[in-house]
Image 1: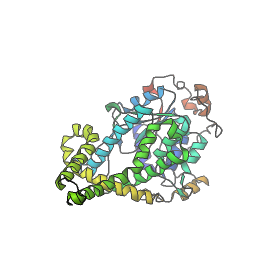
Image 2 (image 1 turned 90 degrees about the horizontal axis):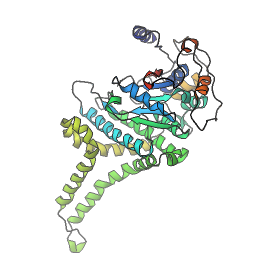
Image 3 (image 1 turned 90 degrees about the vertical axis):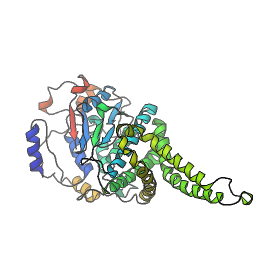
Image 4 (image 1 turned 60 degrees about the vertical axis):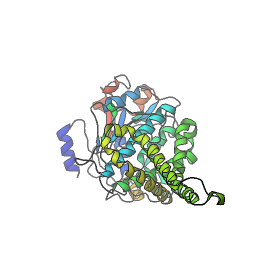
Length: 399
């Protein structure tokens, strides 16, 4: 597999693109390997199905003018796989539209957000080259027993919060990426994996690490709301059923003086009004998707059941939608043993690093950054850290 990829890289830009591999199908090990070999100021992680507009990178890099910002994300939309969106892709597009509203709101209310999405996110290299980060990132366990492979974006976001770095999301058309989703029922497997990662990360943020309460109280509130949401949503139909039953009983026997159809109609009007409010930006762009709103409402109830199922199966850490993703514990153990990455022989200079558990109260100075990640000789002529316009900042990419 390395050969065709390297040929493609050579055809595009052999001077600036290198293909790195690890001997195991493990995303966190792949990302860690890429981090160790990056020599630029900013690292951008991007999924292979993320489609950028030409203006995305300059708008993302502009956020790093604030030296307190450690990570930056973007708004997102769904790109259909075929000529027309399937109902599964429309459901995914609805979810992304709601997410865009939520992250832009939380960013402007208290500067936080639940997750810098892994589809595309940029980070300061100096943060990710910390040995403590690299070890924790590749040795992340749920309940100290189940090693995690997915959920890398959640880990990165929590690291920003726990180590005093600000995050930001560029929610604008210029920085809005397109991404494909599963156009069939396999989308549900994606949602199940995301849901498990959300449960694990939110529980950690709220009750184990607890930095979120003081750093971003509004985000903490939204996390708590989502903990109870599946239970309260499923309680709604039972409550409505009880009220309908009471309308069939005479008032003198404790019944309600309401026609049963009045209760049901009111409930459905409430459902449509509350469930479509956050979909208005999407429906403004694609009004034809209004026919899928009833399916989205039904999906909400299914999703509530899925969230409860995910809560009961947090020990399941598999990818779910990718073949060949093996045991994360075995892959990490082999990597710790020093097994060389398949197909990769280039020797890079060692990179000096800060001692563990020593984090300055202010962002690193240009002098510290130069000492922390001294680049190889071919990069010595590049401009000093932060002394160039944001649109020209050197950027490393990792997929």
